[in-house]
Each structure stands twice: as structure tokens, then as C-alpha cells.
Image 1 (cartoon, rainbow, N blue to C red):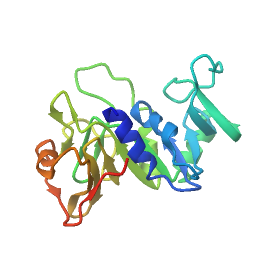
Image 2 (tube, rainbow, N blue to C red):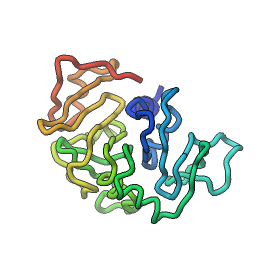
Image 3 (tube, rainbow, N blue to C red):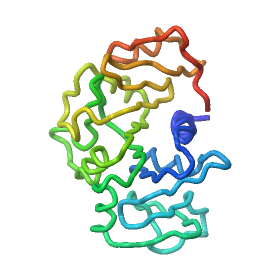
Length: 216
């Protein structure tokens, strides 16, 4: 199982029956493929529909039925399509229970940087700034490091998308909760030790005595 699949499978376990969920582009879209059996969530795509299903099978794509990242997807019974204004009214109105986003950096205060690196081509912030403020719970799904560089910092040094909005960080190494006391390592991938997770993290991790193994 590769890193991204580990992350997507674990994120999916955070979703509860009846949740309205927005999945950001990239790795977060994989979560739709691993929703636990018996759990029904309503997936909202910011380009204008609710009732999104898993990624479309090769050869069974429907023209123009894509998610916000341009990937061909499916729908579930009861899906509804609407314009971008309505889509963002749902987000800004607080009707999204959970949003799952990728990140360039996250820090121990729950600050998020996920839209630009100075000096490089800027793809645009997209709906991330609305989602992190409008959703009731913000989960960051990302690899723990990037080319050996730490991504979980004491303080972000890239331009912020939002301040203090992240609730949970899920990587291939573990699950970290943002609290007012700092980052708590709630679960750890049994392939790693707590020391190894800390070594790959700039922020100081709070490691509880009842640290659990990551459920994938």
C-alpha cells in the first residue's frame, strides 16, 4: 500500500454517516474510493454539485462529469447540479461538515499554507480559503515530508491560506490533532516509532501514554 492510499483510507474513517464532505484536489479526492461500508456521506464538489461518487472507471467516463480537479467521477442517486455561486453559498453558509485538503505546510497553531510558493508559478487559491473557514471540521491529508523537507512546522513560512483553522492532520506516519496546547500525536503508523515521527516533524509533538496504532 503506498503512502497516498494509507492516508486516504485513514481519512475516510473520520467521516460519519450523514456528513456533507468536500474533498480538495489531489490526494483528498482519493478518499471517495474508501468510504467505509455502511457509512453514507454526501460529497460536495466546489465546481457545482452534491452527490459525487468514486472516480469513474477507465472507459466509463461521462463527458463533463468531473470534480474540481478535473478528474472524471461518478454520481450517486439523488445527486444535484448547480452553479458556482450556489456551490460557494453552501460552503460559506456553513453547510459543509468536513473538508479534506492537501497542504504545502501546516503548523502547530493550525495555520495552513497550501496555495503558493514565492517565485514559482501560482495556480491560484481556488476555494480553499472559503472551505477552511466555512467547514465545521478541517482535515489536512498530505505526505509527512516532501523530498526530505518537513511540512509540519512550528510556524508556516509560506503565504497563509488561513490562520488557526486546521483540526486534524493525517499523513502516512500518523494522525495529529491541533489543540490549544500544541500538536497531539493521536495515532501512529506501526511501521514507525514516535522518535521517527518527531524527527520528520519540526513542531514539537505531544505524545500521549495511550498512543494508538493507526487504523487503515
